[in-house]
Length: 291
Ligand code: AMP
Image (cartoon, rainbow, N blue to C red; front, side, top):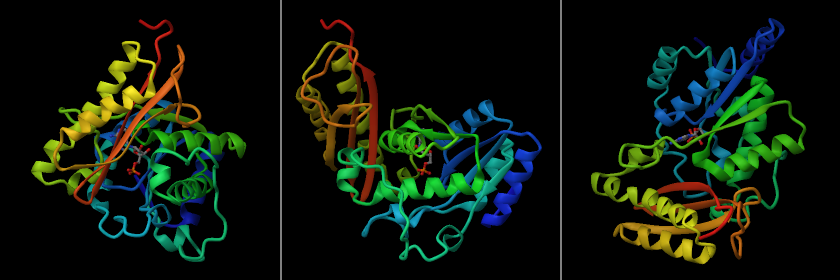
């Protein structure tokens, strides 16, 4: 496995492989890898001859007061796990490589409008602009044919897909379902912050989105009723501070007044346990004929 630390090393590697007729799949991550990330790598391996995993804690997607400094970093463990899986290359640049003018002096941003108005975007101003900008940079440097992302970050996936389509990028976007712990908690690098009590309460997010989804599939057409159900489940966890519980159209990410038969719907929640912010979501298509 190649470890590439600079933009020119990464460029040279991907140019040589592409000239050799090989396809490249990219899995962008911020490291502290877990089974959710590994599922993305496996999907990338199914889709492409070569797999590159990027590991970069992107400063421009963290807001003031968020966990940029404390975000878990464990490069050696991550490299060992990826080598064991048979990944071909890891791109692990430093901040200077990705932001040559400094991360405080970025003048060129990629913004996808509208799609960040609700869900996480409402509470994390500038977050998705940081994500789209860094992912376009990663695409430029790694030159992938395929890019694999998790649906755990459902809003991120919709926004990135729109970016790829509007900027006419020649990258196939692949989404992978959420990988969960046995008790349902969505795997996340941030779960490492939770103490045992918080870890127990964290499953409320999963219970909330699954209860909402079940109710939708049983024919409930009022988004407000689904939100109510999700909030009730979240409030069962005493230490949990709800940031949002929303039901949106899965394509536009806009809130909906009523759910129409066959409509793709995203039920999403975000909550704090102490300082740790967790998210979860469930996707469902409203039944074609309602009960
Ligand atoms: P991160 O390292 O948190 O930026 O995540 C890197 C990629 O892994 C993103 O595409 C995430 O959506 C995806 N990911 C993180 N956790 C999970 C999970 N539990 N299941 C599926 N994908 C995940």
